[in-house]
View 1 (tube, rainbow, N blue to C red):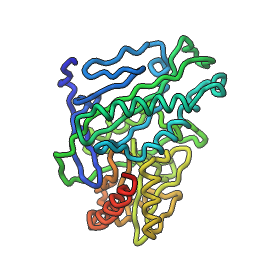
View 2 (view 1 turned 60 degrees about the horizontal axis):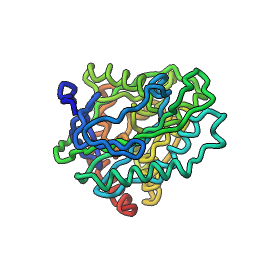
View 3 (view 1 turned 90 degrees about the vertical axis):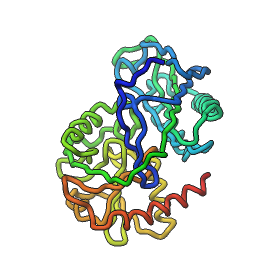
View 4 (view 1 turned 60 degrees about the vertical axis):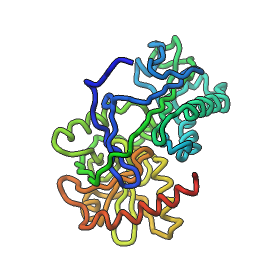
Length: 319
């Protein structure tokens, strides 16, 4: 594989509250990476994918990213179920009825199984990306084949440090009713552009807000905050994706008799929180230290550490 070390950057990952670093290309330089595509596994060379596909022409891809621990894929069934919704959204209406999701998902599962059996590491991720391939690249397609590739990458969690995120709020010109925000789309241009802008200002990420300053989500994560004995999180809506980790953390908190409120919350409520955090499939629970340079709570770690332990115990039920 071509040496892409000019592109080396640090991709900051949290899991169970611990911040770690791993190499990235595009932000990431991949190492110990394997790709599954059309029945074959590629170790050091990338597979040839036709440029005649709507992913390349229009950025039309859907995906899901699954955490891998040893031979266990965390919440894999949930990821597959959400991917099903995304795939049917991507399909032209003319081929939806004839599309066989059972066969397609079985092909995905076989690819994942082959990759996991060949892995030589304990911790990593699997990303499944689906796209429409074929001759029809018109603005309103009427045909095409649904294809996918699976990327498996090692993540090194051995280098860790205790640092929390500094976030900044950014208002969006939101138009409610946009169903694309409910889909795990591979087009992150706007979100990553926003994140890149604030990183140059010394922040770690963006919290997207409505023009009424209502809290939505981060670039790739859901948001939670705690005040008193209650945990709050923005409700799933046109601009808040129902994250897999978000869903399971809510279940975990309710099982442990912790009050959880899903609703509409203003950024001012977030400023006044005892603690706040982000959740995602890869990063797990990630502590927020400050928002708009306002420090959140006095003892963030004291508030969040017990919640992290509860979630670790909850996950053990699925292993």
